[in-house]
Image (cartoon, rainbow, N blue to C red):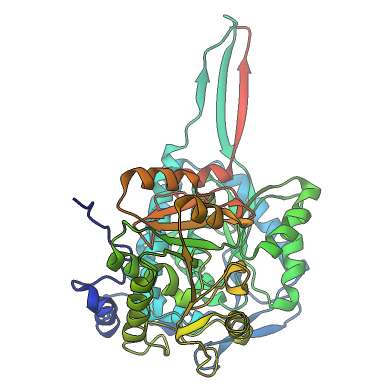
Length: 521
């Protein structure tokens, strides 16, 4: 008797597998109106950075424009801050830390909880803002707001669970204690693909621990970060505890260098590319900072012969095409057993063609928004062209549809030497590869310098245990294609990063351990 297959992508799932996105469309067409007291999206568009509880311009007076990736229209402009502005923000955060670290866990928990409540109360309007600057469909933006608020709720609880230890002493006149204390000013650099949740996941943990924050959001998506600052202030989080420095790509390196090299910053957390992560790690070496890095992935998605193929297709849709493939945990290489290869490809391709709709994220029915910019489109085009030139076949999609849009694409006949298999896609292409044995596919899945996420489908209980333990990744989805939740630790092996975010482990990244020996007792 077969083990029941688990749903892989709850945000995408409907009552009928053949109407995979019906619930998704329904959410988008029937978003609830703003709650009483909720603000309009336009009221969250701030044209200043946020330092010491105030809205501030760059010392140079310079600004840069923020563009909607779906239509190329300018949303507005924000300060283009530099090294000097960042140093001022660090000084502010350091001063604020001296009093913030003395607050009780209960006090910090109450403020974080209220911050999360305000995000929930305004999530529909915040979602519109997020979609306008990042491009993802409105329903996905609402989902991200729920996810992001979940971290504030989680760390409000975890703040009160930070505990030390008492060690049994080998000497009668001594008592041995372990204390956990906030590490200090925490520098943060966050990505554009989750411009709300990546901030709450980092800053929520730091603030809960008693740390203060200086954060640089991605230049593509600063407005979601600034909106969070406004709500944090409204929640009562004191001036100087949360500071956001905005900068263009031209100034990003000097802002990052201050966060890495300042002796007043004792922790750095970064989510982004492996290349940039390595540069930041080198720069942090000069002050021996504690560093958390959540870097690139090359996630395998394996379907074994015992799997429920229909469930695997559902999981593949969520694991590959949410956020138009622009997440670090998106499935990158699809390994399908030779006995079910043709069935999977046929069903996968048909579902992609039937259910995915490209368009502006605010338009009803859209499931696939734009890529973040033209450079991202060019990268995907090059990967598809490389695969086709080496013998791959296009099942569906395969080309740009104008602007920053690229069709959801399925490729067959893919081999591991093709760019779409060797490189992180960060776009809506799925290369499908055939395999014969468990040992073979596990070796192929692990044959990469990345180790963030991996997925597989099987109804063989012994195989589930074996493969889950053998995959060299920090996250494993078994019969699930969308696995991230605030309650679980998130982080990678190998070159996919250092440290963990989320869950009860996430707050540890912002704590120092101190051994105290009390003698003469």
